[in-house]
Image 1: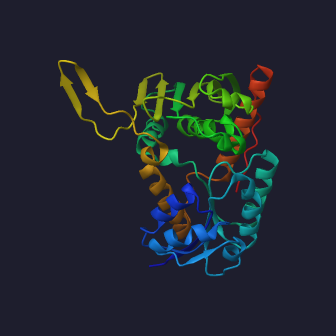
Image 2: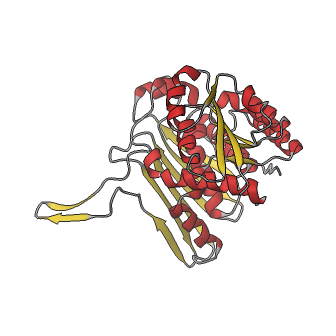
Image 3: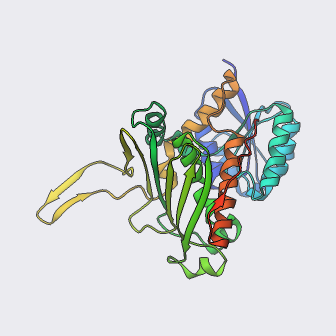
Length: 339
């Protein structure tokens, strides 16, 4: 059995999540993990069988035994890491967004294209069983011609001020998943975006120049209309729903809960709240996306989520930010790239 040797760059929450998923894949070995706070990482790494922990990610890129890397470091570091990794012939999995700048993202993708390496973006929701069923249903024509795509994405609680400062804003940090899901489910490019926004959750978020509540309308190339609603605080849990309505019917996904049990008493009918956060809600999706990346390397299959998907979601996010600033709909020009 051929094995893939992996290096992980960044051992924060998402880097550790990927590492703990990857160690269970028989075809994969994690050789090294890098983090600028390496001393804080070693004990955890050794517990899951990773012996090499380094501060400088270049040690991973310079190691000829490492075939592929997972980029889980802060967004501001992504582009130089991607460029250097591509030069070293490493396949690359990169968490979203690729960067905060469309121009920088295009530079990174040009390096990937030149090197001819695999490049997958971490839009894990494409690999969720519920959402992939919506995609399959639309693609197979079961609901006819798509008319309306509705996406609800609400966090259970707002992030910290420190997180907001470095997040790139709600559209780049949070809605970007929904922009990708809209493209994925509809099978069509987005041609226009218009937003209505507010600060209704936490004044701190507004003081830092961001928003915490948004309704986003989209127009698709195939004529369909999209609606996304975002909030940084849903008191009942992590609210994640998708609906596709078409000429022949509709497909709707509800929230995933710890159990589907329903208790009926004289006081009422009770069910579990939705899962509390993304690590619970998308646990299986994170595993599946990792398997898909490894399988693409081993079998040379096309990626489910490539660099162009990352770029398109960023373009839409920046257009949404422009719409917020101007109060007007913003047209989106098609700039599809092949990587």
